[in-house]
Each structure stands twice: as structure tokens, then as C-alpha cells.
Image (cartoon, rainbow, N blue to C red; front, side, top):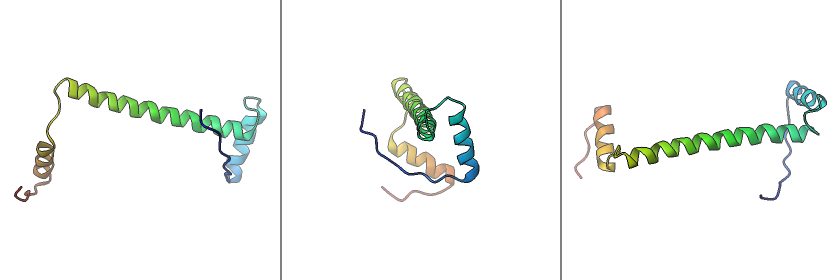
Length: 87
């Protein structure tokens, strides 16, 4: 795991109160722990979504559901009603 880096965050008072309340409930040792946990969960969720989308693309390629870049551009131009310049 990479070395932790210190970051300072300024919170609006109502958000600060919420974070402090979550910390005082005993779930987290400090406000920093709470914020880091929330950010880590969001980061992991985004990573999982990206992995799922990449897997969809891999599955499509393996199933033969793809087109060349030229076909893709032709499709976009056609959809937009534009004429492509001569290649």
C-alpha cells in the first residue's frame, strides 16, 4: 500500500457537525477516519463500476460484437446526418 499523504479539508458547519456526530457515535476513532472510510468506499465502488464496464467490453469483443473504427465513425456521422470527408 502506498504511503499516506496528509490532506487538509475545510467543511461547511453542517457537514462538520455530521462528521463529528458519526465519530462520537463510536464507529470511528476520528473525523479523519470517518472521511477516509467514506472516500475509500466511494473509490472502491467507482473502481468496481469501471471493472464491470471493462468486462462488458471484453465480453462484447469475445462474442464478436464490435466494429472497426471506420465503421464506428461512419455510424456516428450517419446518426448526426453529417457527410464525411473523402478518406
